[in-house]
Each structure stands twice: as structure tokens, then as C-alpha cells.
Amino acid sequence: MEETRSRRKRGRPPPPPVGCSSFNRAVFPLLLAAAATSSSSSVSGDLQNPHARFILRRFLRARLVLLTRRTPACSSPSALERLLPEGLLILFPVLLTSRWPSVAALGAEVVGAAALYSLEANEMMASDEGVVKGLVRALGSKSRRIVKAALHAVMDLSTSPVGREQLWKASAVERLLWEGFAHVALHCWHEKEKELSDSITSFEARTMRILSVFLLHVAIRLTADCNPIFRKACLVAAKLGSAEVLDERHSETLMLSQKATFRNIMDIINASSNFMEVYKNVAVVQESNDDSLQWMRWLRHLPQDGADDAKIDFSNLLRMWDKLVEFKGNGELKDEFFKTKSKFCRCVVYEDACKMFHMLLEKYRRTRRQYMCGMLSLHSA
Image 1 (cartoon, rainbow, N blue to C red):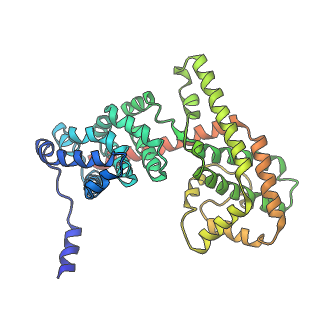
Image 2: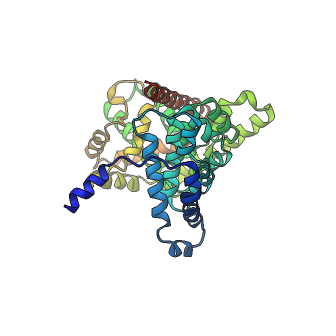
Image 3: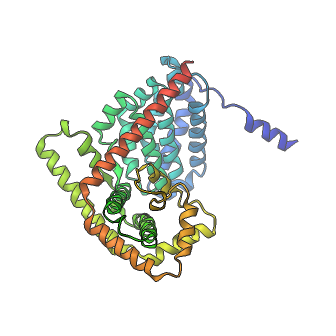
């Protein structure tokens, strides 16, 4: 009986949002107290209010359901005010910088969902300086979950003209991380190497080179996990996408600064990437049937030339593992890995990676824009 009642309860639709006055009078004080606890730097704050995180997570999840359920969007001012009351907007800067990763990530997800809910909701979120600044700060978090949610929210906000303008002012659209740029740089270098050597290398040598590049992508990820420079904002896209609004001196200074950071990152990769550590990491993931390598799937959006046996299959990582098993006892693979790593870090062309990085960013923006148009069409149908 209890199980049936519990199942019915879980299946109920979320309650409608309370009125703005009711929110400000009853809900806002409770959320404010919980949010204040979540932003406290002392551990004692968590002990004094053990329910604060639960309250915030439950509220944010309920708000996320309201913003994403398949019902016509309410764009009237009164309806939006009930869905996104002013008190909630005031809390977002605190929520997005919460010391609890689950709360900060959920806060960013709510911002993204609101940005896609309707054009009016998008502009409401983007026009709030506290929300935008909170997202920018979240992009610099040490938590990968928070950074991922913040990046998605930034792209969701950028689907409207007002959102793009406000995000540009805060340098948020272009604040993608250096780890991603390093992966793009490796891809560009590998594609150029294929053009120069495909006609003269044997099948076995070509396979070892592909596996070496695959392992080097994993090595970059492992290096990024323990080196904070990879989590810093990459402003390469700001240079390429907004050069017309930057004065020449500022533009040149920015370019030199970004290029210096890139060279520093290449030196770190060259010095810290260990073959056996990378190989064992892939082996553990494969043996435990873990999905920890699924982060690589975004690389499939980068163009690859040549025959299928000259491409890295980022959509089928099991195939890559099967190839690695074939070369397990081959000492040449280890030598090829170090040779590939050294040549990449020494010969990679920064400008080529910039062009590819900007192309990928534009492709992502276009996809998000198409998604929003589809959502708006669905709501207006």
C-alpha cells in the first residue's frame, strides 16, 4: 500500500509556481537562509543547518521541471513573474557560487532551462547582471560538473540578441577552457600530419599513430585534472569573434597573452604525460565497463579526413580499445606515443587550432539557436 502511494506521489506533476507575493513572503526567506549557509566558507555552517542543501536542491529541481515540461510557454509578464520571481533572480549569484557542487550545477541548469523557455525569459535572465556574473564565476570552478552546467547555460543565453550582448560584455561566451582548446589543437595537428605522411606510412604504423593520438587525448585529460591552468578561461574565441570591437593594441596584447598560455600548456603536456599511466587508465575504464571516457564523444564533431582506418572513432571507443589490445605487447607503441607527444608539443600551429576552435564554437551556437527556434515553435503551436 505504501509502495503504491509512493509511486503515485512520484508520478504527480509538479505543483504550479506560487504567486510572486507568496514567494517573497514564504519561500524567499527560507531559500535565502539556506543559500547563505551554502555560500559560507566555514564548515560549521553546514553543521548548523543540515537541511539547507536538501532544501535548495529540491527547490531547484522542482523549478527545473516547471521550465522543461512540454506545455505551452507562458510569456505574459505576470506568468513569467510567477515562474521566475524577482527574489529568485536575486538568489542566483549566491546559488551559482555555492560551495556545494550539486547546488551550483542545478542553479546553472535552471538558468539554461529558463533561457530556452521563452524569448522573454531568456532576456529576463540575461538582463540580470548578477546572473551573468554568477555564470562567469561558475566557469572558473574546480568542479567539472559546475563548469559543464555553466557552459551549457552560457550557450543557452547566447541564443537571443540580448543574451549575446550581455554575455559579450562579461566575456562569458568566449570563456571556454584551455583543456578543450588543447584537444582541438591536437586534432588539427594530427589532421595536418595525415596529409603529409599517409602516402608513405604502412598500415601498422598508421594504426599506431592513431592509437598514440587517442592516448594523448586521454593524457591531456589526466593532466588537466591535476593542473589548474587547464581550467582557466580560454579567450581565443574572443579575439577571433570580436576583433572588430577591440582596438588594435588591445587585440594584439590579448593574442600574445593567449599564445603564451598555449605554449605553457604544451610544455606541461610534454613534461607530464606518462604512457603507462594513460594506458592503465583506459584499461581500468574498459574492464569496469565504466563510461568515464564518454567525455571524448564531443570530439566527433571535429572533421576528419581520409579513409575509415585513418580516423579515430570517438563514437565507438570499444573499437579503439580493441586496437589497443592488439598492440599491448608491442613496445613500439610506447615509443610511438612519446614520439607523437614530443612532435605535437613542438610543431603544433597555434593559428590552425584557433580557426578550428572558432569553427566549433560557431557550430555549437548554431545548434543551440536551432534548438531554441524549435522549442519556440513547439510552444506556439
